[in-house]
Length: 207
Image 1 (spheres, helix red, strand yellow):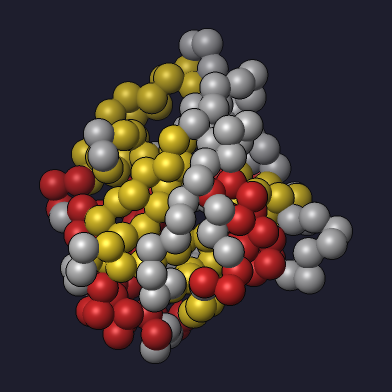
Image 2 (spheres, one colour):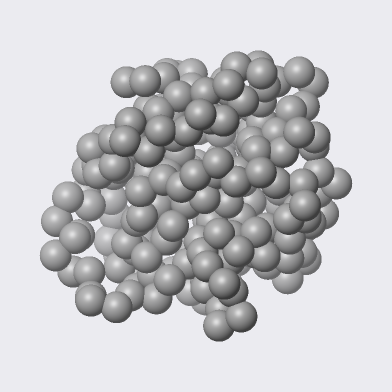
């Protein structure tokens, strides 16, 4: 998808067109019963899906987390993180985290809306995905402590039906999970990140 086409679709963002849990469960059917585990006051977090032009096409960024002793070790994610007391709102959380993690500055980003919140039981976070548009490609730089790699993904790759595949994911030491995932830049993108990407994919394709 070229950048002008993406810009036209997202500048006039219509949240009522979002498919919400329908889009989520399509990419993560194992989560159908997760909502009953959601506490009344989960921790808050936000991620930024930044769409920008590169070589006349629309791109967005993902990051690969470093390996560590935790539930999201080495996973592919959108830039983002937990809400902090100094953040005015979750949009500011997403922008602050994007600046800290990949060197995207708030002045470069036009916020157009947000996608459906997602609750993540292993970490007890409710994540708000924020959609932003930039008129130019940022000078991306990974935060060495928080980001192993920045992945620049053409939006057309996400929209291509062949990017949706299925695999077995190992969770912890013993449990295995058969799940759909997006194959993007030869990376396995699954779980909450894939749910977010599937919702924006459905929106852009008007499924």
